[in-house]
Image 1 (cartoon, rainbow, N blue to C red):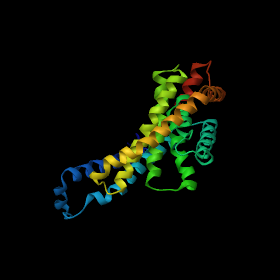
Image 2 (cartoon, rainbow, N blue to C red):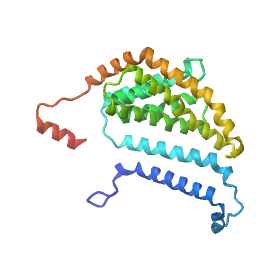
Image 3 (cartoon, one colour):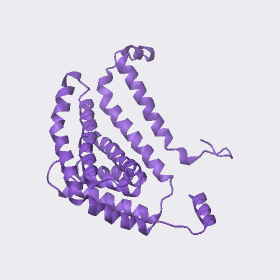
Image 4 (cartoon, one colour):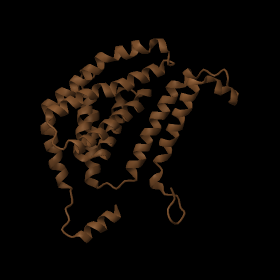
Amino acid sequence: MFSKGGSWNTAKYWRIPAAVSLILVVISATVTVSPGVLRYVGSGHLDISLYYASLSMIVAGLLVMSLVLRYEYTFHGPKEVAVIGALSALSAASRLVIPIPNVKPCTFLIIVTGYVFGPDAGIMIGILTPAVSNMFLGQGYWTFWQMLMWAIAGWSGSLLRKRFPNISIEALAAYAFIWGFLFGTPLDFATWLSLNANVSILPAIMVAGVPWNLLDGIGNLLFVLLAGRYTISILERYKRRFEIHYLDSEAQKEYLSIR
């Protein structure tokens, strides 16, 4: 955590909010399972369920902050930053101009960006998409959850590239379809937490979200099938423009040491 000279290494700041979020999860889980522990701090009559919505929003927000800080302390060229900004604007705008509920190309764009440009780009577009579009659609506890889940979608796109570098469009479409549920189900759970975590209504809320998650998945599948190959081709061509290929191994070592 400290440099050789003893000063604080700011590149590791991103670990602090992640650690705090983990602590909050452990504490809330402990209190949920054993409410009696509150007596030790003089809060024996506290109803923890009233605070689940706030706790979940704080935890999701801290995790998003951790991802942003990690990106800030990682080297990125100006062209990469520019493409992240452009794709984030495109992804956010697509939520506003397409009138069909839950049928948006956001998840498709975020996964494809992570697939082509790597985890950092995918994560940042996942975070920026709801941060910008919700200024028009409405902010709430769901914003941090959307930012977190879409960030994970972008990160998963980069993992998909490592595992399946020549994945077919059909397989990518199936993967995007699954993400309709991977994205929507945690948001349904967050909705339940916002209603004081009443166990009796949990099944109803989760079942009610299935048609919307299915619609989201179908939209993802269609966008990949219709535009996936073309979009990946465009992004790959742009990526090649700012790739650096070294003929001198010493120059490569010097560049990597700067990074």
